[in-house]
Image (cartoon, rainbow over all chains, first blue to last red; front, side, top):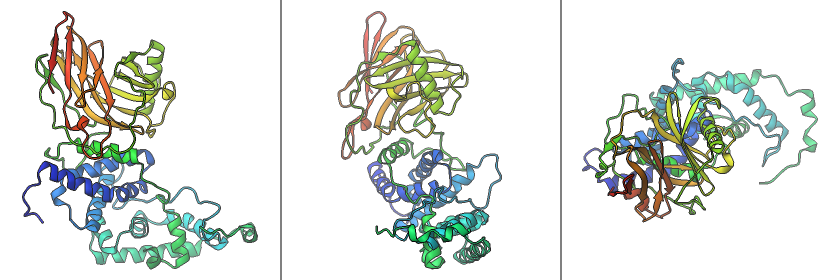
Length: 193
Length: 266
């Protein structure tokens, strides 16, 4: 990398289009998980403008390219926290709606677990939310996630295991399902996808 | 991946809580963001924080030119435009809105940008091209313009509403323009849910009576000219690869009050 002759305009653009097509979904979803809907498009555009400008710096390997872009996205979001304290990590929100019926496994225990998880999640620190989200939702490997956050893979693995322990602890502490819930299961039909 | 972190049930529950669980790529947004990015000159130096201009401007460039010359604009970039022809029933010749309609359209334009509807503002240009409305609004702090379907006039669309495009020059333009001059402030690719369009906006001197745009694909688009401003927009067409509307440069045909017509090549 770095010893190629400068791209011609057409080559550069073609390369960018390919990168954009391959990574747009991942980048916009990463942003969507962290900011209000109204900001997603602008932040996504900012990230890709950086990519467009710094195209020669972006790794060729698709997984690494995605991690590079998500690192930029993360920095962009931090920079955009105007007036607020810059956080070392970004809180990640959970889905707002927990559907009453789950396609696939409409199991009451699963449903109650999801509700407990939704309640426990905000109690995690932003750093722990981020660590879990990068692996579980953004779909990154530990090494890639470490690169996005800007720490060593060892440090990141440690962070993930602490995050996991913290979440388990919150789940264990959560109150059990209310009495009414236990009476539901026979009525919920099992659905197949 | 989740299974590696947690037991299967917790993992499944966690997956269901992904805020982007139901997210799908919106093709209109995909394309308009792409157009926005490619309109940036990659050779420009970046700021330390890699920040980019705010959403309102796809590209901004001010050139005061004598009527005989249109200065070279920033390099036109090829943008992939996929899908159906957009902006059906758009007309190349605009029709001015009534004062009432213009005010309503301006309010919707401001609302879409998060400004209160009672913000004092001047409507500089307001026209319709078939069912599509364009409005150029100046409030105390800024100028902005919007393209919207007529159904949005009089409504207060949220800032996330993709049916309307808001953009424009940003700050209020006040430098005097020579009598026979055309000052192009905006020449950009923009978009709404409907698709991409090219937008050209600027100011004209006191002796300019009319402006017609000859687009790279040969469309003749009459600009609205009013109160020292001109504006025109037209659908960017479709192509499987490069679309000439975006790679080529339009030329302007400028008619003076004395009847002289000057063609300014792009």
